[in-house]
Image 1 (cartoon, rainbow over the protein chains, first blue to last red):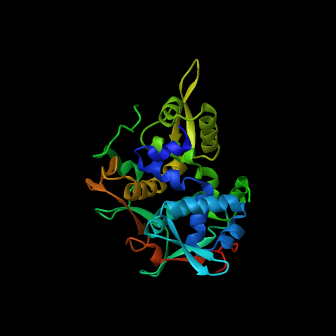
Image 2 (cartoon, rainbow over the protein chains, first blue to last red):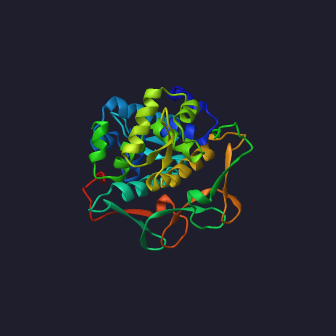
Image 3 (cartoon, rainbow over the protein chains, first blue to last red):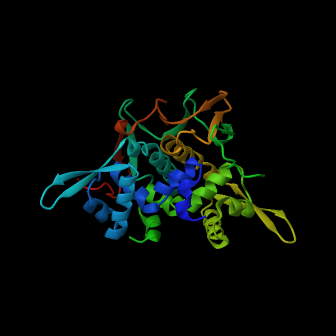
Length: 156
Length: 156
């Protein structure tokens, strides 16, 4: 399978990864959640080529994850802001952060902490069930074919 | 910045993405959560070259995300199983699924459903606060410097 064919698979993971399954794309998303919005900020933070950065931002815009807003004329310069679809990557990003904090933060501990404004406490994200509100583990999650099931589950 | 330098950044996202920020790696992880465990199963499911697949599995093993278990002698064949670290990618994967289901499942709806065994209901994953148990949105999340803060937050 070629990478661009992933987007055609009837699997939400495959289709998502066709958009965000690129290391630099997710680093741009990280930077945006940390407050960056301008091309030069991403460029300084990530140190990747302007071509790669530009391609990734274009893909994110094309997919409706970010939108460009002109903030200066002559020459026109743009800021990038999340759309609602982009903001919804917050949960993905927080879970990646949690995994990284658990396994890669080393002796010194995680570089940043997350504060939950509503309850006023420093928190770690938990995967919870939309129905009962309890934390969900892989052992309590059963995958079932949905209405649009194309036969993706591998045979055992 | 070169890709391999990401692992050296003092950022949990960067370090995580040095391991899982590869589209095929996350597709292998997806297949494992769907029940696949053997090289041939991944190969059939993903249709990528044996070299790429082999490299990705080796990285996952080296990073302690999966372990190899011999299930046959002459010739020796191996199954891949998640370690505890690998199982902890469940939350990352579920959030990617949720994002994909929301924005890429189309008219027919999501291909698979998730059933929460403990409460007996079909659920969608929610990002909840470890302290108060409530759902967390990006607007309620404040990033603060931790003990190991290296100055990663971009200037605005």
